[in-house]
Length: 241
Image (cartoon, rainbow, N blue to C red; front, side, top):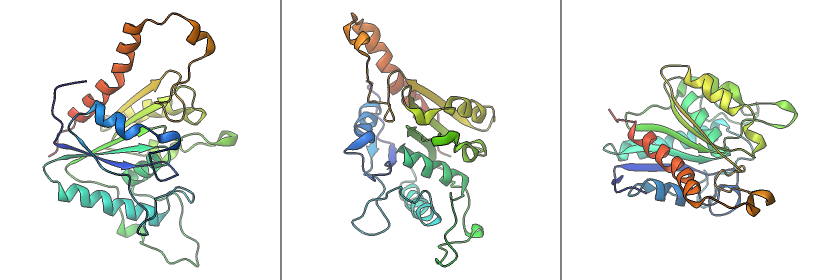
């Protein structure tokens, strides 16, 4: 990949709704990041709020989830002041990252449930060595034409790298949203679409016709090298203050 040493980089990972990267649609993402950015430390996925449990996405990005993620990310940044901290996510984890940057939960708890914090206690995540997020398979579009674009369009002063699979129905409209985010000069936004990729963009499905065709190995290798190079450029583009 490259001879550069990225030992000054830590990737803080938030998995999809299953809470783990080892199986399911998010499999292979930590390994891909490790290969793309050699020498960087890739942390285990953010655990759940109860010891021994995974952070799962069944209830969405609630206030409790947001506070838990905020505290964990802040601790990582403060304990490693000389390193760049970048969040890497899959699916639901991307939603957590966007809500962290906005400082807003997806929903409020029911009235009979104790609030974990009030809006006054919480703000958009900020730390001098926080370098933004890389999101694999951001779940923007829902059934019946619903979309989660509002939280993204309201983000300011953020760095966000979207990695999308062309065959993922949940990315409908994501490229346009990314372009709108980029129009804010204070944002650094990258959008990369993997041809044939699914909800996990790294899992590429080739058509029978494509399989039967003669493949230009050199051209395919060059295409596959683009994403790792873009990720390194995204990491290099951030200078911790």
